[in-house]
Length: 147
Picture 1 (cartoon, rainbow, N blue to C red):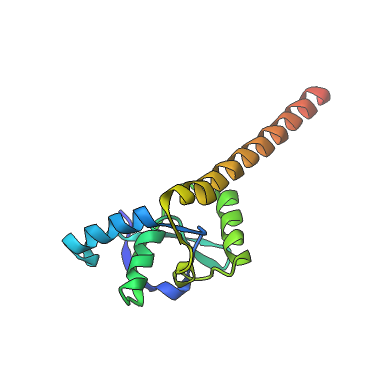
Picture 2: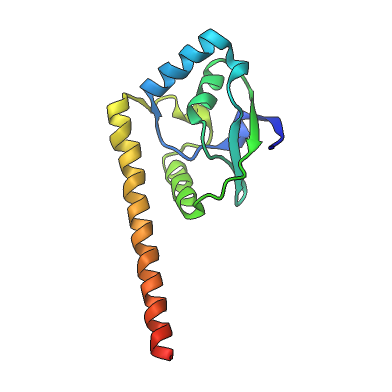
């Protein structure tokens, strides 16, 4: 079980470019019923020099909107696709998104979110999978050639 601790919101680098209005409304409703302290801790990981969100951007954004300076987090122990996260974090930096507060003007209707975020990530994933398959094919051909 991961250890839960608090960290300043300003110290965590987002890895997504947008917040869905629908997801935001859904989590706001949960907070209204149960309080913000009842939200699950946000999973984070170290990526180079950055501490990044691996999930929970909407929850973190609501904490920011609530005026919280810190949020409960835990180190994400899942085996993640680091290449995907590196690219997503770079997208954020290219768009001047360095903290959760920088997503303030990037809240979009869910249908738009599906296009501008989910579709973009799906396309990236397909490109990475293709690149990896091509590398694997090249290694197989090289191995067969050397036999």
